[in-house]
Image 1 (cartoon, rainbow, N blue to C red):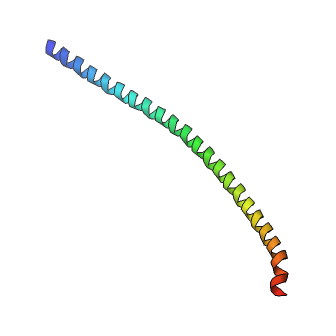
Image 2 (image 1 turned 180 degrees about the horizontal axis):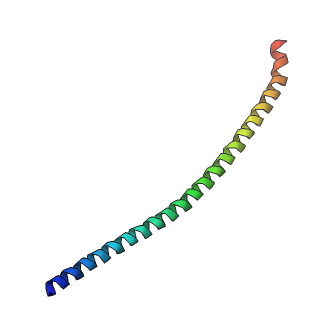
Image 3 (image 1 turned 90 degrees about the horizontal axis):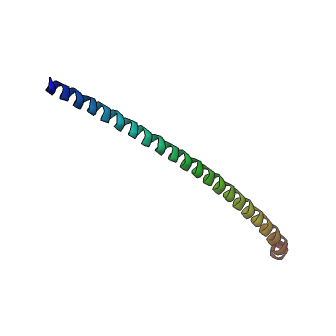
Length: 82
């Protein structure tokens, strides 16, 4: 009887340990998911900012190119074709 009782206790302890391990793993996964979500949000925000900056830079470059072409056309056009 004592042996059977000990075996049952060991089995229950093993089950409890397994359940605890599963709970711990689940908690860790949840924490990791939360951290990943935060990181993802941060990454998305950074990507949006970078895209906005790139768009602004492209617009500025286009404006500068347009201005340069306009100025060059006015200055050089007559000299070349005259």
